[in-house]
Amino acid sequence: MGDFGLNQTFEYTELCLDSWDAKSSGGQYFENSSSNPNLIQYSWPQYYFNSKKPEVIGIKVLQAEIPFVWDAITLGNNTFVYTTAGVPHTITITPGTYTGPQLATELQAKINAFTAALTVTWSASALKFLFTYPLASTWSLYFADRNSAYSPVGFLPGVLYQNVGIGSTIQSAIIAQVTGPYYLYVNSSKIGSLVNFNLCDTAITGGVGPEIARIPVNVQFGSVVFYTDPDPNKYFDFFTGTQFDSFDFYLTLGSDQYQKPLDLKGSPWSLKLGVLSYRKASSDLYQKPVTRGGQTTISM
Picture (tube, rainbow, N blue to C red):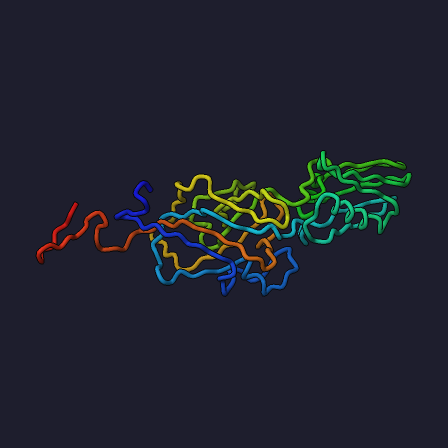
């Protein structure tokens, strides 16, 4: 602001929010998660700011601390079709977050329930899976759409991958995002539509979404994502006169790996928000009343 946070027109406030401080939730249930619904208030916390109710004109997520404990493979992206000898089988991966070798073991166990001795190996250098088939018949892998396991296993949706013969192979067509997308979104159903943080939409009729910040995932599963806004002096405009008395926040995975809210399994996460609002003080902060000898004057 250039004035150390002191301004005769605007008031600067920082809100430090911890998910465990919430006593209620901004939503009613998880989507693509099997967690107890009672835990949703910790993944989608609802807060109240009744003591001030400022007229907000600008807002920004300045910092965040988010533990990487969510499932990269969920109930919404854990299936694909494996066909052998003309018979299709739906493979269902157990939800969770895996390393490459761990997911290779999981895939091999689930596929071998239908075909013995198929091997699945993970290449740490190529970041891809290699499927090796033991029989002479035709076989294939098919990831029908974006609600399949195409991304963590490394294939394109809607494409049939097929081969035939003893020792034939199919390798991931693209880099396998085993641990999920490389970024998260901070969302708010109350605030999201009131700020100019926008995503492009493939649909002409797409509207304004709930997103208010994008956070890179730069740690491995079990660690904590520490985020600091790289340009903290730029704020998103808020609709003039909006009373900021209650608000909610939840996280979603980037790309199209849908899970709402991102299930943090009861683990605490936190945000620090910078808020600009109209100052309600009746006196001008740049004018300092001074009293001498019973007489008050204004020092400019």
